[in-house]
Length: 63
Image (cartoon, rainbow, N blue to C red):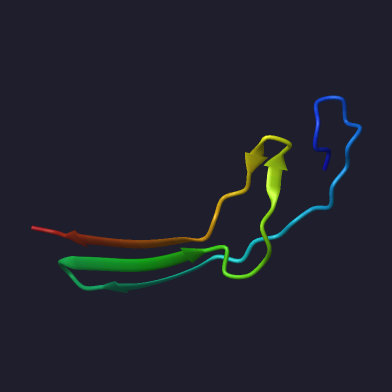
């Protein structure tokens, strides 16, 4: 990957591990997700940092 518009500054690639677990019944859905389980900080470009670790909890109820 290159880190500038002229493709002069090169940086190494990166990987990301994500996970999610959920529970479902007839009327309730609950999901817990975690992004970027392991790994170091990275830059998507010379002016944009990569996405940080995110915890996401979703719940829904069906009437």
